[in-house]
Length: 196
Image 1 (cartoon, rainbow, N blue to C red):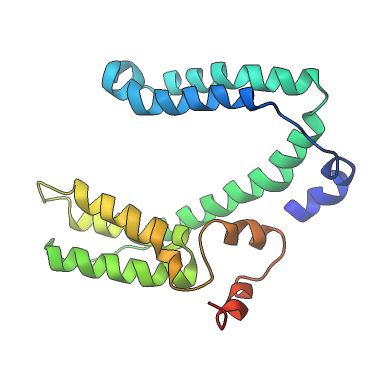
Image 2: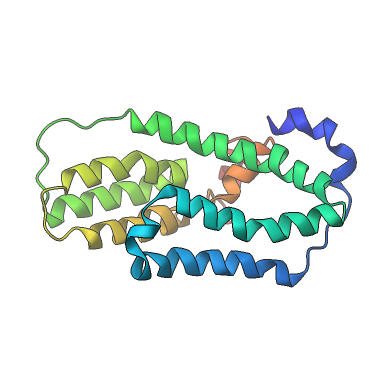
């Protein structure tokens, strides 16, 4: 998809886009809303409509700034050539891994969770952290649904599988997807293994 729009947007790719540092303020406010709103206005924040409203209100000043400075060509390139293919790739991973179902009665013990985390850690080094996390998050949640204390398991999963899992090989984290969308093969990183 990115290659399809590359020729169309070739003229806007090389123009320099300078967005002022103050454009980060709405993003920082958004992060604060995500962190604090569930604690202060819990029931109001539960509705997706309100989350969308906050996002639209906070993004409007940045979009207006970009429109007033003729930067929409670069924004179009970012959305069509980078963001849309990236989200499509993540969505397809989510759909594919969502269909994998472990059957049977797996006991939710610390040993089982450790095995899940170890498998996820190793898989993340060969298939990417996002793929491994999406593949194993549902089985580990389903296995631990009867446990009373399970938050720590998800925290360890996020740290080990979704973040640190790419450390064993040069495959790494999200840069893999960005290069993959630019035409690099999935195994391109493996030629860096001797230096690794």
